[in-house]
Image: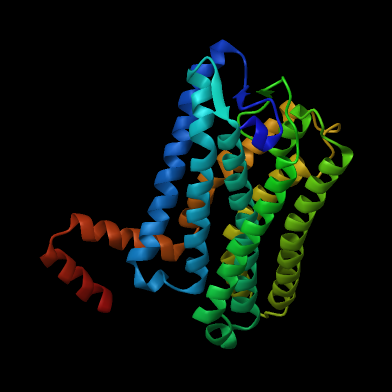
Length: 324
C-alpha cells in the first residue's frame, strides 16, 4: 500500500467529534437516533413515491433521487462516526479512507445538482405551466438525472485525484470523524498551496454552478409570482416552493460555511460542526420538510397506511367515497 500511494501511512485514526469521555455515549445515542430517523424518513419517501402512481411526476422523481442520495450519503458517513464514540481507536485503512472520501464527494456534488434540477422544475411549473408536460418530458428528466450523477462522478474523481497526490508520513491521526478535504490536507507532509487552491476552485465551481442555476430559476419564479394578480394565486405559488427553499438554505448555507472560507479563518474543530450539520442533520430534515409541508405526500401516506391497515371491503368503500 505504501508503494502505491507513496506514503508511509497505510491507515488513519479518526479523532472523532470530541475527545471528552463523558460525552461519548450520549452523542452515540443522539446520532444513532438521527441515523435511524434519516433511514426511515428517506426510505419511507422512496417507497411512498414508488407505490403511488400520482406521485410519479418530475417533481417527485427528483425528490425520489434526493432521498436516495441522502440515504446513501448518510450511510457513507454516520456508521463510521458512530464507531468513534464506542471504540478506543477508530481506525480506517488508506484505501477505506479514499473510498469514503470519493463517495462523500460524489453524493455531496450530486445533492447540490439535484437541488438545482428541482429549482429548474419549479421554474417550469410556475413560469411555463402550459408547456410543463412537454418541457419536463421523461427524456428531459432522464437527461437531467444523468447530468446530476455524471457531474457527481467527475467531481468526485477530480477531488479524490487531488488527494491521491498527497503524501502522508509518520503522523496518521486525522482530526475529524470522517475523511474530508481540509483535515487530509492538514495531515499531509507535502500539501502545498496548489492542493488547497484546487480544492477551493473545485468546490467553488460545484457550488457556484448550482447556485447560479438556482438563483436564475428563482429570479424568474419571483418575477412570475409578482405578476399574479390574486393573493391566493401568489400564496399557492410561494407554498409550492417553500419546502425547496428551506432545503436549499440548510444545505448550501452549511456547505458555504465549511468550504468557501480559508481554513485559517475557520478552525478545524469549528469546521466539524458545519460538516456535521450537512452530513447528518440535513439528510434527516429533508424528508420531514418535504412530507410535512406537502399535501400530495401526506395524502399518499394516508392512502398507503390505509392499504396496510384496512380490510379489502373497507378499502372498496373508501374508494367509492373518494369518487364521490
